[in-house]
Image (tube, rainbow, N blue to C red; front, side, top):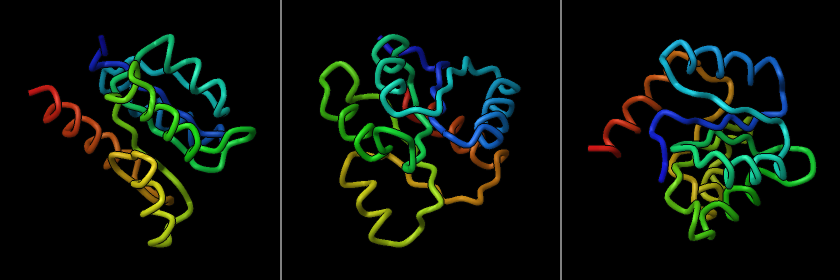
Length: 127
């Protein structure tokens, strides 16, 4: 069972990860974080977050591969995935949606706006 308050932030740039985490914690979310794709998969299995913020360019396993594995696994397929990437070309966004992303946001981004989108998304999904 998913906890609508748990969010996993998967971002290899520590500064960006810290900013996202700070904004989410300020809104009362329980945040788990990693900068590694393989670790993201094991944390997803263990913690069962309601939502994952996922960078594409990660060491080891790419964010697209992580997303695809999450969305094809019966245990984790209902977890919402927001891809957050510097890759903003249309074909890259299409690829993100093809592997199962629920939303694709490009960098640079507003942490405040991203946090509001997450709150709205999770509220609409839980009602």
